[in-house]
Amino acid sequence: MKLGELNIWHVINVQLKRSGWERVDRYRYIESLRAICEAHPSMLLYRLDVPAIQQWIEHTFGRGLKRAYIRFSLRLLHDYRSGFKTVPVQLTLTCPYCNGKAHLKDSAQLYGGRSFGLAYICENHGKGCDSYVGIHQDDHMPLGRLANSELRKAKQRCHQVFDPIWKQNLLPRNKAYARIAEQMQIARSECHIGALDERLAQQFASAAQHLYRSLSSYHA
Image (cartoon, rainbow, N blue to C red):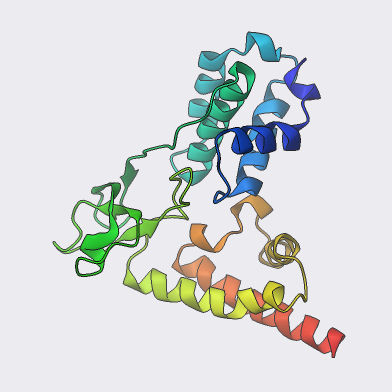
């Protein structure tokens, strides 16, 4: 079968189930694998040219979470073809504030010795930098970009105005993200609270608040 003929939903769902993963961003994997298949529609699955696709990824996508997801989606595809379980990733992130490196560590150092699992923590945390980011528990992918205290507060505000939209069943979560992405004039794949910087977080909160009011008025 050619990559352009793959049922992408099926591939991702089968491989995540095989690996025993539930707590992941399934949507981003589907979008990432779709990008690979659309760029290499004639490549045969049984002759998957991993080095060629890796080279395409490096030349096409800049550093960041989007490239990380596409690279890891290639691993999912390879393991799907081979019948292997996929092991969690361990990334090295670059801090946007101090240019230090962030590695996967126990979050106990963030919470006075109490652990809430793993997180990507800047090597300069506590030494002039306070950035870190949580992870999806099963695949160890970051929840978003590294964030300092100011950005974390902005993201909390985003959740305060966005989460009631889907928790109150005004609109499914993915559709709510799609509507907000349209208002912000950004790609749906880029519209996720975890991926936002300070400027986009402010725009997102404003758009989410407008959407909530509009939907609440409609359902009143």
